[in-house]
Image (cartoon, rainbow, N blue to C red):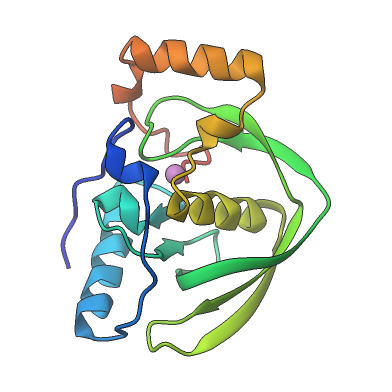
Length: 172
Ligand code: CO
């Protein structure tokens, strides 16, 4: 396994597009191992392939119950609303409140290509929505309230995104 360099906003690779995964092979297994090592080293709660420069529909996360690997994930239903602080490994150093669905149901494939369904709520649902956004070229700063977005852009322009990841906060 290897720690891969994490791409930092405004790297255009973060804005997509991404392609579906069709080959569930040893290369995919190696990439998933590298993503996990990179996520743990950061440290972050989730990591999507575009964040290491790979434009494929692959994301992993660990919301506290071990690593989950999502290939070609798709949200099939959503319910409710929640609001909480998020940060991103590709925009290190800034954290803002984001409004998300409270609960999501997704379909995805595992590393062998086998399809599965997953229902998640609260923080796990936030992480899943954040990661799937990465596969669409969407960053959490795109979802902020206008005032927060203005502030975020100012902080980014001032170079504060080179700040460090805060281990005890939601860096997704
Ligand atoms: Co992120």
